Length: 235
Image 1 (tube, rainbow, N blue to C red):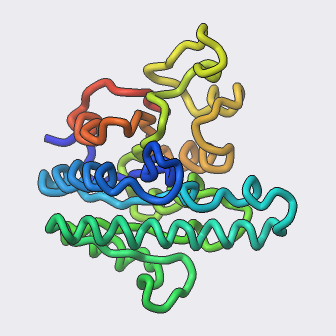
Image 2 (image 1 turned 30 degrees about the vertical axis):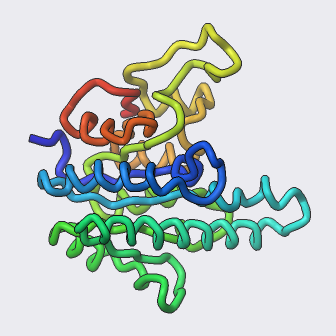
């Protein structure tokens, strides 16, 4: 039996690009969708937020040439493209998926509505939340935490390119130690790179555990939900 009944999975856009670092690695996307489909068939309700970094990384890619509000809105559009692509892969695999957007984009998805999202989840549909919070200056980490709180998710599964939370950047410091479990307060106090501070504070205020793990093996999604000790739990 799964550890959680309803979860919000946050996936980075870069993870969907694989070694190409931009666009999509559809073989990998198919594996991710297959892993999610397995847990849905096992009775877990799944919402998904996808970053847009495989197309656009807001302020970083704007490089001072694009004003912050415009850069962030471009990032929202990138997340919509990712949700459309992933929803189609889900559907090709026989899994019903719905795209809901935080801003009105006719033909892309239906406008986000909390009650409707929960209805879809209860019907066994995967719900992909596009366009972040709908406002600039908020990351997709914050959007994931907001949606998790709104749909009453039992946990946030933070699927990253790194296998947990470390005391320091393990790519730069070979002495960095990975935590099996850590408290929100320590993450904030030590400014550890889990989520941005707004997202972390929101998860803490709403008492939503965050499990950080590597998406390199998409089957880790199922392992986390089976209760295996993978990655780092922030609570």
